Image 1: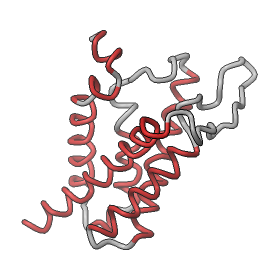
Image 2: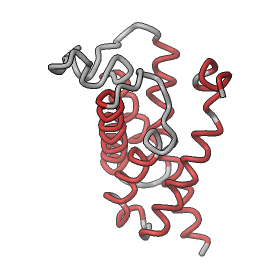
Image 3: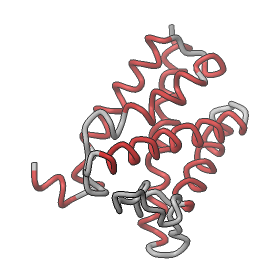
Length: 162
């Protein structure tokens, strides 16, 4: 039971790190190394593929931070790097969906902004993390609640509108 709780905490920490590292890197580095993942590509309707908020800097920082966190938690570095890549890949898909819906970059959609980036790596890596399906869903739900609670810190203007 204690080991299962530890594994759940470890998994939650990896999700948080994958989500927090790109934001923190952006705050620290400002405009440096801010090349967008989509290279500025636009679709036929003139909308961006992903937008300026999805950067190579964010992807690199998330993957590296998850690799380091996994190592500190005594998991293989490759597991952490894969976790970060899967989380940020799912986050990019969420951004793609939001662009197709006409939602402005930086606008939060509860659920869409949390669940894919948590569930994809948690489900894909559930076995090496020692999680069952229920555990993975519970960790994703906990992350969603924590992420929504931190909205005012990450996006002060958005938090003030609510």
